[in-house]
Image 1 (cartoon, chains in turn yellow, blue):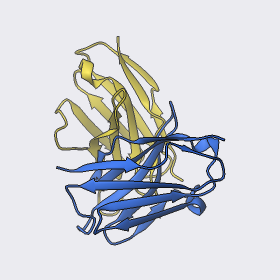
Image 2 (spheres, chains in turn red, orange; image 1 turned 120 degrees about the vertical axis):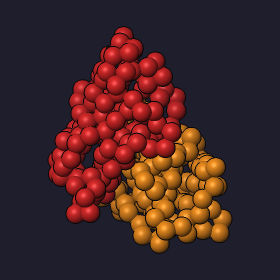
Image 3 (tube, rainbow over the protein chains, first blue to last red; image 1 turned 45 degrees about the vertical axis):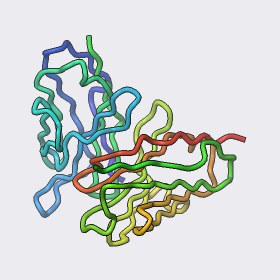
Length: 111
Length: 117
């Protein structure tokens, strides 16, 4: 299995400030077709997860521009340019190159 | 508008077989590239993808749970069914089904399944 490791596991952020979450995979997620098979999801309190980013850097439909994804191979980052109160929740990365595995999750909270 | 809804028992005894049904609308599971997956989340824990079925009947299973899982689709009924054998208390979780095209782009609300005698 490909192991996904996120950091930090807890992220207190002041509204209006940026935030960054790292996700590392135990194997490269870069397919020969040029896509990185890495998604980012947000699970808001009491809700189902929602897709934020697919293929490492493509924002899903309806996702605010303050969310961006970057990285390739084994190292990926989700950035929020200016955190808002509604961004609170648990962020998960997920690889789908070989089977599907999720990271442990990063809990973002407002300071 | 795409929607998915999970249904099945909320309480099941150890060693029994769990059968969950995902009923969806707003898309067809015969459309190229489309899939439906089952993902679970034990209380307070991370997500785990159990199984995934694609439009062409390609099926993918969690390697660690493969021997216990079966996923099938009924395109005419717009349903995907997951069976999981030999249930154990550690299988207590919220079970989600989700539409997959570019990522799991829409999820059902989930159904909590408790395994207890």
